[in-house]
Image 1 (tube, chains in turn brown, green):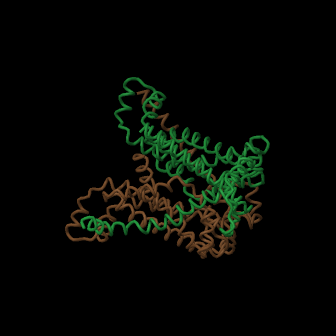
Image 2: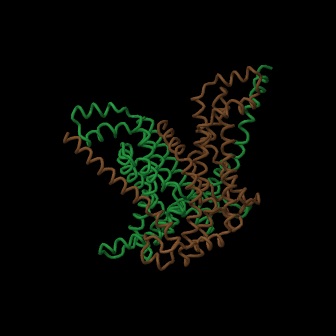
Image 3: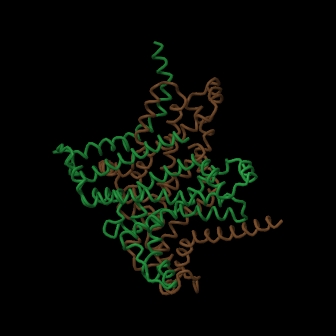
Length: 277
Length: 293
């Protein structure tokens, strides 16, 4: 009896400590958001206090300075097209590699594996040169091509996933007279949905948040993604503190919304990777 | 005749491979070959005409370049301490998040959330929090306790600590999630019988939880090691590599040498050395992981 009560007290204490730590983890974001509504003097006096009155001025200035709709569109187009390209290229290529028995496919797999350990930084300069020659520098389609080339990671995930799928359905489709192309779209690709979801989520978060490639390959306001606007804003408007914070909030909100909607899938994706790895 | 037929049967499947092969070859494999080749030349960044093969000269310069060598040391320090701290925190954290608390879901979301935004945003955000200016939250707290302001980002060793700290803050939730997945696959009877045998919490943690988490530790540490070797955005935004070169990482040096200083040969020699380091670490990890798993 005493033991049980002691355990109860301990679990309540544990919960309070964990809640406190959780809030501590989030304080930087609270600090970020709350100070966008305050004047500089007010922030300096008490950074964590609630604003005396909500002023949306900083957001107005942020939207006006950052060319928001152009950059938002750029970010959406870059993310959507890159991720679609990665999924299509990887799923199509993984299919014969996983299912056909000929030796050549193993060699192709090995060839894709060569890029597996390659850090993006290593090929930055040759890529820059290549995009320059193709007149795709400072162009979001050049950027998209660079992201699409990272399809080899998705390819390995697909290839691994194929081994968990039975071949019966594909064989049945072939007997019914489906061409490989038809059976891929009608039978195989729908079966790949769980791993496709995982790939889409992680690639979306990667491409949307990426700073290194846009930093190197984009140079004008017209082609900037949202993350680049944060970089530009911090360099240009270091005097207007609340506006810089507002810019960061504007960039953060879409990915936060994405996280809230995808939370279950994200956790499931990490789980799948961990158990298998 | 038979062979020809077999080949014709493979043709549609080969067509499946072609788009990925083209994109990968043009945008990744060929640039990789170029980077390796050009690191042995005096390429001027403009044209391939008048190119001279200069052997290991670029590599010799790299090894004598103080900034590059400092950035290598910095990257190693970062890539050693981040995985250590994250792992030490994430394992107990995952155990706590696995218990049957009422606010469990909120706790999980709170710890995970810092890994969601762009690292660039996180870096700038913390540069304000750690600032010595009047809005610097951390120094407000420190001075309210009666201490003097701490220059988190402008003293060399402390700046490195700060970069590591922010990275650990942003990663612990994600990696606790990896451990959580493994924890949930451990059967509850194991804990029951240990408790009946009189094991205390610490014994259960060290004798049951840790050994059973081994595969997850392998996955998590490998991800952390590779991502911290490649780190760019976070120190770039938080400290800009400073003060001096004290938090400059290899990625930043490669980009700076190549694009700002126009020292292509040295930039690419550094990039190739970096590739070798990452490859060696990955291979060692994979081999080690196989043994454990």
